[in-house]
Length: 398
Ligand code: SF4
Image (cartoon, rainbow, N blue to C red; front, top):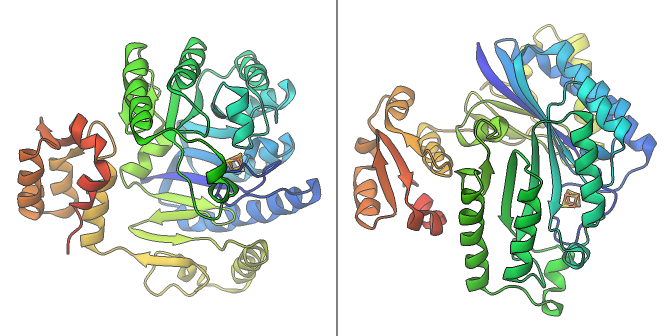
């Protein structure tokens, strides 16, 4: 039996944030219902491929999953529970935007087995939130957070962002102070990346962004501030109280099997990666075809995306990863985690010593004090984290 993590994409948002390049858009209640109909068919239909797996985590991400009416969320999770083997105590996370839930909706989430809430706050400064086009203010977030605690959520993540337009070192510090005072179990803190094609990118001349030095200072401050308050940094941008590291995200970094359902979702199972179509018309066509083949094709397993002779060519960007690519990913995803990569596990997976494959690279990076070895694990040093993209690129095998 192999572990499986399930990601479910809910592509709906009340309004597009100005920096957002995720697959998300506004939709009517009828469109949401229709999407959930297809999604539950997909989840059910695909389950035949995962009979050798047991589910250790489910993540409803988006978009804004909390925008769905509670009953629709219930239908999705019911489809998962009825068709997959869930492990005892599986982590079930839902991403939630402030102001999109009521006390009743949060209580329903608990009854559906959702045991982790991830709230997208980004900043506690209302003018910063307005500048990036968030739909909520700080006060609305506080209400959502308190309602979530009252409903019984004992595992909450809060998302924060640094390097926002008009943000100062002191306003960022204020956000850290206010968020830690609430004592969430988990905090994710990312720097804003201006993506081409977003409104904020097009308007970038109109705003004053923190300088690179200020961005660095915010980054250092995050590390120290959260560390002093009992949050362990377990990944470059993720901090948690003891025992609350996000299991689902760790699966990505450890290259575990994950199945993505819904519009544009990515999967990687048995070292094959693929994506679901990105337009609603393509998505519906893909689900309908899957349904049809289930009813008519006795050899439905031949549609499993990871089989070499699989017959459904609609999987997007389907890629069977070579051993070389698997090793590269193992290194640069694993190095994102503060615990680093385990050289014994590397040998167990690939049948070769890490030093045999990466000897000169490891030696060079160690001599530059960018990585270090500790009890058989290779980790980034503090300086290495600062230039992590460079370090990770050194593990590409040509
Ligand atoms: S809430 Fe998230 S997914 Fe939706 S528009 Fe904003 S950043 Fe994008």
